Image 1 (cartoon, rainbow over the protein chains, first blue to last red):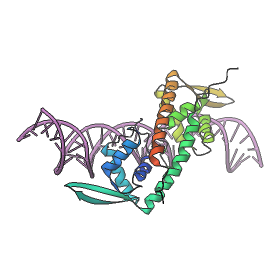
Image 2: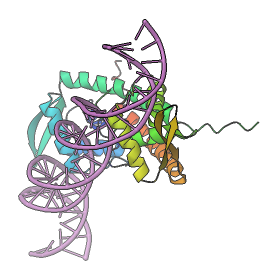
Image 3: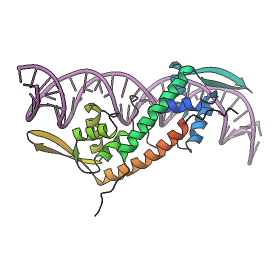
Image 4: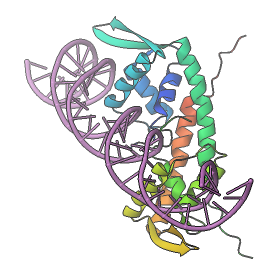
Length: 112
Length: 112
DNA sequence: TCACTACATGTAGCTTTACTACTCATGTCG
DNA sequence: CGACATGAGTAGTAAAGCTACATGTAGTGA
């Protein structure tokens, strides 16, 4: 997977990972890894700053939770986050359709 | 379209635009615009540096052409460029499948 | 007990890549 | 003549993910 292939598409996936309920960062990381068949095995240096970005943007709300001596930062979608997710889904459909069209498949010239 | 949605995917599309024969930069630009239904209306500041990048990488070969007082820089795929295009197509399929899976569609909870 | 691994969060600095905002030049159409 | 499409290019900027690190707890196996 190219280094910056997911530039601009990560936020949508993070929001989607939070759609079914609040999750903490590490869990979000595993959702991405599992849901992509291991292709998106993102380092913590990617995931945590991205979540903070979404928090600053008002798309998620965060709180600390302590369970069994384990502190976790739990993120939850806001209304704005749901709207953003919907927008991202729409944008992704348009984007991926356009790229798929432009990228081929290679139609080899007819040999009559 | 999000500002840097195509980070990392542009090169493949440029290579694809050159697959059916040599083209100059401006023509490549129009292939992307037309082929995306107007969604990828990229500024020259994006397209020309990108083509030079591909040239440096050895994926395209460039030459000057003069027609009717109009100088054009014509780009052509190299063997390495064809390999790269094939790789990009494969990477795109994996990538887009993973994103599509992760992004949804939203399965709303059953209401029995 | 000690080491190692999984869990859990985070930051500083780097790199890549596309975008903005220009410059320069020719041909054509009103 | 002026505006616009064609055609190529650069300098500087911003964004976003990655690398490499720091920090700490809990569990597991030797």
